[in-house]
Image 1 (cartoon, one colour):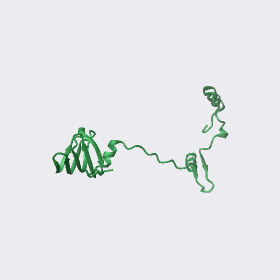
Image 2 (spheres, rainbow, N blue to C red):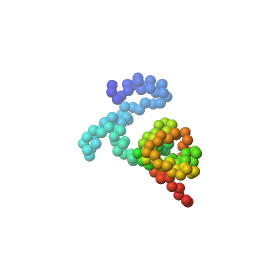
Image 3 (tube, rainbow, N blue to C red):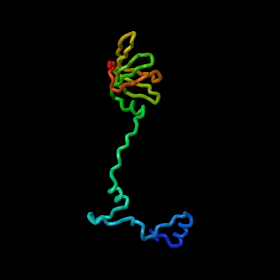
Image 4 (spheres, helix red, strand yellow):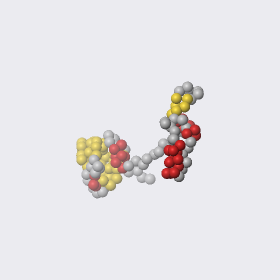
Amino acid sequence: MHGRLAPRSRALCRQASGINCPPASTRLPTRRRQPHHGKLVDNQEIAAMSLPPLPKVHHPLLPLELVDKCVGSQIWIIMNNHKEFVGKLIGFDDYVNMVLEDVREIDPQEGETRMSKILLNGNNICMMVPGGDGKWVDG
């Protein structure tokens, strides 16, 4: 018996759950014909047609996701010892050790040094500014 519960099964259902099972005549059919389209449509499709679209949920951007989005672009890195590095981010690992190329090292005591490629230890990074150029803005 497809789609119907036998009278004995309905009685067992009521007895076990304390809830009345709906009679077979009140259940929605699994498929029905749409009069204006002339095709069979599932109940889920009908429900989806009548619901408004779900709003887009914005998930917070996690720190490593932000760093990942910066790969291939310029980044300004400020270290714990107040040295700064500006360069193109080539790659990084889970410890935020970074490979930079076309790098400017800015040291408050020694001035500016240029390097073609460096590996920067992630333990000493204080702050990263995606797209930054190493120039402080007075505000």
